[in-house]
Length: 107
Image 1 (cartoon, rainbow, N blue to C red):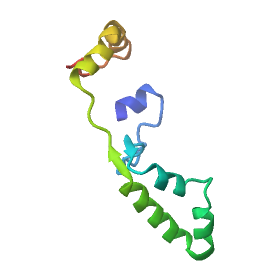
Image 2: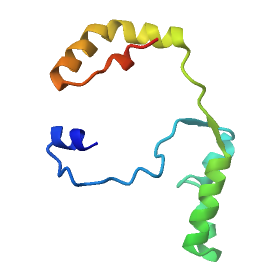
Image 3: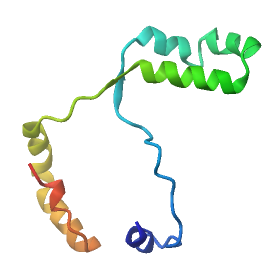
Image 4: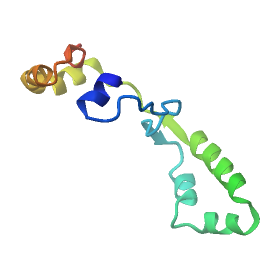
């Protein structure tokens, strides 16, 4: 991370909090539940009337997590098909940034 911060000209002593996973890929189990929890539906507005904010956030977080289905890993053949046209660009980028990016090309 320090090398990356140096490359981006960010203070190298900065230590980001990476304890939480953000934007983890998933599909919804129930579209209906997802819509009920969305900003356009009145469930959230009704919950504001009788549920304190910390409780609303905790319940909402648990409902969203329970409504997730993890995305299956990408099939290696499809990954290879998608990576093959970028092969030369990845090698040029590797030279440009001075880092080993061959794991991007691994099958």
